[in-house]
Length: 577
Image 1: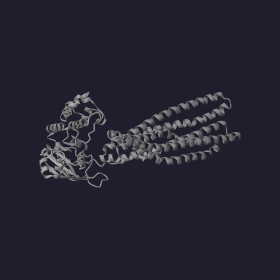
Image 2: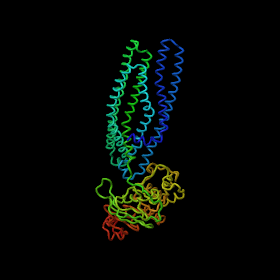
Image 3: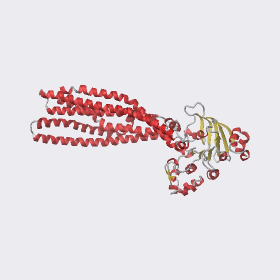
Image 4: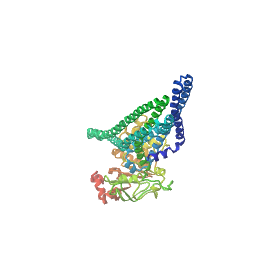
């Protein structure tokens, strides 16, 4: 998965990567050349007392060092740019794919996991690429070059490499093999910490209302300690690995000095050659250690790449049409014909055989007990889900055949829990129509019964709105969400229990204003409150996902027992009549 992900997203950066490889090659060759020059200075300059040779060769060393520094700096610069660009592209790819998901796929992964995959997981892959381009590219060049240069200095002494390098590789491999499952657990437990934290921040009012602070602290501590335990396991392995590397390196140095001293004593080797060989040994072992450091990162990055690929490879259940409809010739008539829907993993249908018609110029209301499928039914129209059976038609065209842009212009939804984005009142209202004028915004606010409180806010249309609308009340949030929909001016208006936080007077005034201003559009209202829907042109009664009655308020009171029970649970007989 890691290789496939990198191959797909690094393809546009082949030139910078090739440049990094060339720069790393030059700087590594310069690094390898320096010990030979140093050996020459010792053997031909220091031993013989030739100051001129020392100065001239030292000048060459300075020039080689300058080339090494410039190439290393340039390689790090271009490598870092490439790695950061990769992170940007992968994050954008995840974001674009998540934007295509239906509510079903978002629920499958969960918001905390998607956030972790977009941030922490991408960062791990990005860091691997950065370290590869800045360290790993030079490591094999230095290792192979170091071996060749060591052989050039003394072949018999180079036999030590046949023992030292395999021992180091074997020791490191055994540790890395144990790290891979721990890294997967670490990413999963980061997900858990994010999920618990998100739940506690979102549900802070509920926690305090039921005085469950201690319980939630314990729950977060359990998730946090679980992550710490896995992290400690990884840390112990890493802490165990580097001492092993250092022990091998130090023992190698001792062995080289021991056997090299014997060869110098026998006249088979010069002091400068031993110094150069020792430098090459350190370079070889350093390259192996750099590779080791990379191998520590690879298992975690591999796990992260798998998690990223899971998101990128998941196809949305709401698929765009091959030849989408981009223009309608009707006026927004909505028809549901034999619609069935079942949530993933559920045994029973949420909606079964639902037939419903909502015509332009009429208000159609949907009412039913909790869990009857009212919200699910509305979510099928803008394709937050797709029906498992039957058809959802707008002006005779199945919504699955619509161009997404046309569907969003035609159908507008105020959800059960309206959400406002951080910004201003104006930026939220223009969300569905960026070109709306201030006059249109004020008109929408007036219809939504929100003008009065917006006028009292500091800055009015430019008043600040917190994330999720946290600095306004529930009723104000609902009215601003309704105004946002009015600014967009769709042909079909869907209100999913959007008046529940309003008092009766505001509810009545808002519905009267809607009737005056958008009376020629198709309006569908889901409500629990009978007073909200009793004046609708047509009322549809849902019970356990099936339509059990259709008609006006008076007709249903006389003919439908389910509707009558709902009404009398809220109103007296006299009020209902």
